[in-house]
Length: 106
Image (tube, rainbow, N blue to C red; front, side):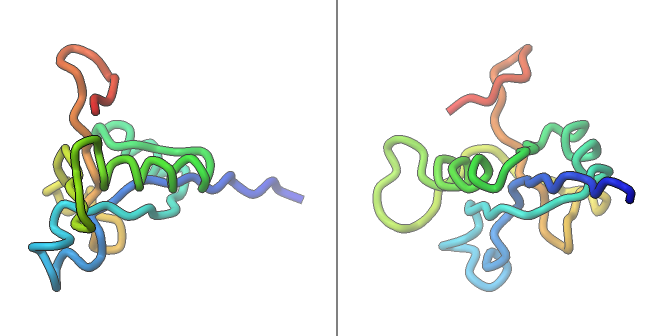
C-alpha cells in the first residue's frame, strides 16, 4: 500500500480579511498543504510546519506579537500578491526575516 504524504501546514491571510479588513487584514490562519505546495511556499519565503500543533502555536504568536494588546491581530510581515501564491484564494503569509538570513524575526 502506498504511503500517504504527510500533512503539512502554512499560514495564510485570514479568510475574514476580505469582509472585515480593519480587524482581519493583518491576521493569519493556518491551512493544510500538499508536499508540492510546501516547496512553492518555502521558495516564496513562507513558513511550512510539520505538525498542526506547531502551526497553531505560530498562528497565535504571529497574530499577537509582543506588545500587541486587545483582540485585533497585528501580524508583522506581508502577504503574497502573485496569483500562483494563493491557497484557495488566500494569500500566503510572508514573515519578516532578518537581513541576509532565513531567520524569522519577531
